[in-house]
Each structure stands twice: as structure tokens, then as C-alpha cells.
Length: 288
Image (cartoon, rainbow, N blue to C red; front, top):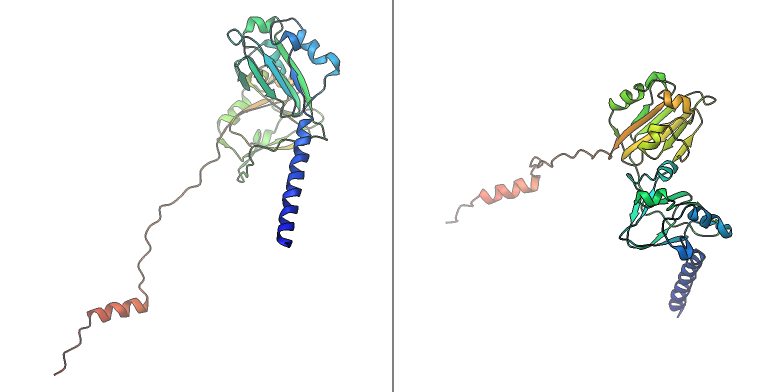
């Protein structure tokens, strides 16, 4: 009886925990973008829609985009510059069903445009600011990584992060092979400079710091490379950046561990095995 009571208590507690989590998610809201207008080309309609009724978007909320998929789509882009220029060449995600539900999983600015550039220029684009509500549970990460200890590279070597030469950091980067798990050390006078990690090549080329991935300002910043791909760093001082204080590094996957073939070990017969082998060869003489 006691065992059954304990089992019932465990099941009851588990169910209550599950209901608590679900009740947190049930507070998330679903917004139909553009309301009755849907997702179409309208000048400034989506800016006004996002601002109307004091909308406040939270992590876990969803946006519903409804439109004609034969002429439109929903392209999520990385930054404000791609958003302003209607640049869909490097999207974060593309939706094209005509009834797309996009759940907002991270705080920060989220940018959506149509890849139909003519309609995007006419105003078919949406920018929303997503905040984290502490009363709601944060969706768990999809995976966790334990990265190996990699190499640490001091950016610019003895020169540090202060050279205003458009080719200096490019050459410095090309001479090295970076892998996931490596780190970059930026050293500089923090009253003059900083380190902004940015999203894409367009922001890198134009020295645009408006939508950074991360900002470092200590003067002794250690930045770990946790994802393969191209990583971009600039200073937010536009004059210094345009003079060449920016860095692009290509990060490869973490190197595979070297494995060696398993060679057979040298046969070492025990004393008992040697005795058994000797007995097999011993032939007793017949008795007369």
C-alpha cells in the first residue's frame, strides 16, 4: 500500500510540474501580422501595426503571416541594414506556405521582409522588438555543446586591435586556420575603441554597428568561436573602422581526434598455457 501511495504522489507531482510549465506557455500570444490586411505591400502599414495598441512582443509569442504564396514569401533577415535595403541574399529563414506561423524564440530585434523586392520597397517589411518576460519559462536550448580547449590568438599579434590599415587584419587572418573552440583576444585602449561582433558581410563592408551580435568594451576581450562559418568584428568608431580596424575570420569545424589502428598485442602465454601445451606433446610410454 505504501508503495502505491508513493507512486501516486510521484505521478501527481510530475503532472503538476507539467501543468505549471504549460500554463506559462499558454500566456503566449498569437498576432496576425497586418490584422485584416494580412502580409501585403502597404507603405508604413507594418510599422504602424507593430506600434498600435501598445503591442509588446515577448519570447514565446507567435506571428502569423497570411498572403498569396505565388507572389510573396516571408524572409527573415539578420540586421537593420538588410531590412532597410530589402536585401534578401543571406536570409536567416524563409517561409513560403502563405500561412506561416513564426514563434519568437529569442529577445532582441527581429526583421522580416518579402523577397519580392518591388513590394518590399513599397513597404512590405516588419521590424519587431521582442522582450523576455520573467514570468514565462524560457524555451530550453535545442542542444548543448562541450567544446574542446582550442588555441588562443591575440588579434594583430604585437600590434593588437589598433591598426588602421585595410589590409593588415585581412592578412593576419588569412595566415591562420581557426576552428570551433579557438578564442580571439582583442587588446586595445577601451577609451578609444571597442569590439562589435556583427551579422553579415554587408554590415562589415559598410561599418554598420547598429545590430550587433555582441559588444565587448573591456580593452582585454576574449571572444570564443563557438560556431563554424564566417565571423565579423568591427569597431563602432566609424572613422577607425573605415580606415581598416575590422576583422573577418573563417572558422572551421573542430578538428577530429586522431585515432590509431589497433595492432594485435604480442602473444604472451601464461605459465599454465605453456604447461598445457607441453603436456599435449608428452606421450607416456606403455606399461609392460
